[in-house]
Length: 252
Image 1 (spheres, rainbow, N blue to C red):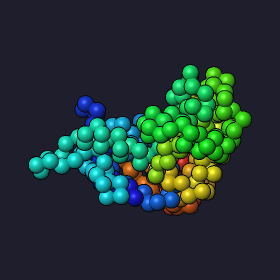
Image 2: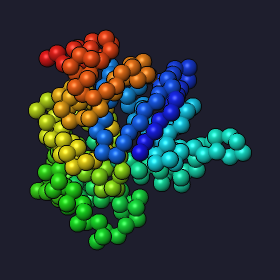
Image 3: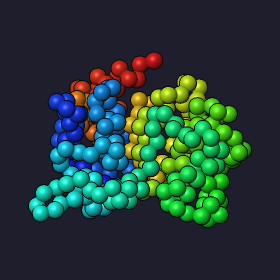
Image 4: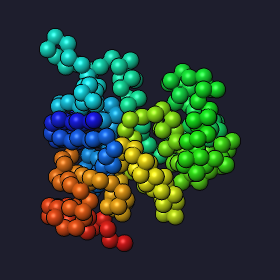
């Protein structure tokens, strides 16, 4: 479904991603773990074309993302093409990025109405359904200032789902939350995984990676240094680097 081949990303003289090879099949729940600064968030941003890669290729169902070949040279894709390709993905960030002057329902409907140019009457039922799915049916007419951090993040998840993406990307979605609010967001993500949603999740939540994902990827220094099933990586058959990271990340 998604294939990254020898992907490099530079920021000036700094190489954030080194020849990354990575693939995702339909229905996969991939947890990406690793120390801060290891390239995890950059990888997601390259997949979603918020950052354009410097070398290698990213393909979704065989279509090259973010660039096109003309006269034997690869160039940045046209903005219209990028906009279309970004709709393959739903992105949930660390911050909630809700529109403060929109109600909860209007935040969820913003994508279909503004980007998809749908009629409100055609999408309002799905918006209500998605808010019910994330446990916020009673907050439809509230505004972001009236919500807790966990509730805001659940609105952000519903908003991403409203565009009916084929892959959901989560960039440390619980890192900005107070500890007691983390589980309400993880529970929504567990439900999505159970329902067969294809997901790539950058996370420091080791229990989520161990119990919910079907594949765990460890990044360090802009490289994928280990990957495998949760049982392989969490039960001691991963690399020495993987064992050290999991041990340190799992300590209270």
